[in-house]
Length: 251
Image (cartoon, rainbow, N blue to C red; front, side):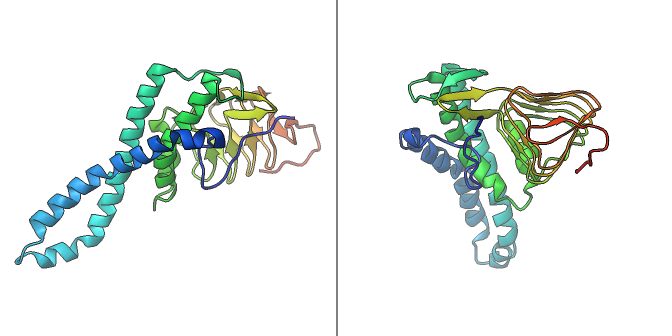
């Protein structure tokens, strides 16, 4: 039976425990580097406002200073993680397929490395006062395609091999998984959700799922590996099947 990899709330990008210690230095490097722009900003903020005749301005702007630093930290984390990802892709470019869940397998190993690189910026965006920026900005920054007028702020979306077109609604608590584990196999397969699709709450889309235009997936349903949901049709169940007449819909 197909089993998705871990989806811990504090770990938006799962990493194999066997590789975590090996790549932890890269994780801490990205954290450290992301604080450099904040340090420079604070240096100039203190230097030019911490003066005898401008103390009141210094304290007045502390809330704004904290808010600006949060954005600078996020942009720094994104920028340095993007740099590390670019280097990693030059060494081994991500690709779809079925691979061995073995740390000696290059595709599996580099998938874990990419997740470790993305972990810090994704964590920061998840704790942001405007959480919708996580999906709309950060995931797009990593290459996930999210179209216009798409509602996906309260769902979990893989950070690669996902394409969501325009005017799509994804219900609260739904999960879009472009990766998964089946016994000793590791699977990466792109998920495509075309325009005007409606996905109910707490659905799960497994790797390779393709949902055609105007299709609907009922709440608490999940798709199988490489499932295709036809255009302008309704699917429900576990796994999702074409709705028969007289069956109640739930969205």
